[in-house]
Image (cartoon, rainbow, N blue to C red; front, side, top):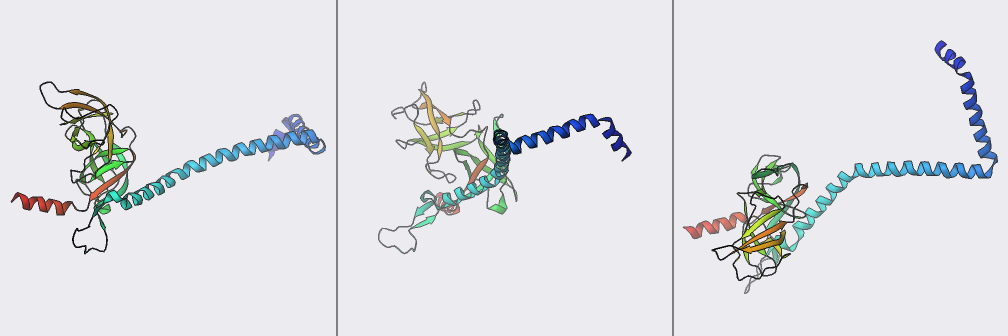
Length: 275
């Protein structure tokens, strides 16, 4: 208390000046229309700016929750889409209550680790066995293919990235359905190579490349990229095609894991045929 009194005594002229200035401003604002208008305008501007910044901060904090909701909604739509189902129609005798049965199930998830600067790159995602994710499940993002699950624990899974020189994807040209094998050559993370497309096929830069549907991992027609260039292989009968990948592996966050619900049945059929 003694220090406060000493401080007031020491700065009493300055404090008196501030007090008189405040009284003067209040009198001017209250009894002068022009000053009152200027004050209200300035106050509204300051309050409005503060509210705008607060609103932006609040929106940013809510963004994560909104992204989670959007990811969940997209997953539900993918599971309901016609491409996730196969027809049960029989030509002569229909005995099923439903025309279609689901073949592919989509599970939403997020990338927690992503390696892109090696020859054998991989990702880690936040979904595992408890979520129904098993090895050899396909992984995609909103822009295209990401990779294939190689190993799963209860809560996480490792994914062989498309940017892995050992991974081959069955791909086709959308406009004519000619298919081949797509593989990353270990060079630029934005491009891959499509092989086994014969010379007689008509190609153009910009042609869309999609999944063929001939594997047990990815459904048909998932976007992979577009043709950015092609040459004829010397001494061979096929093109050397460069594909610009639609997935930006520098920015992979939200993903979907694809489970083929008919995979075991198809594998059993294949095993029986091999006997």
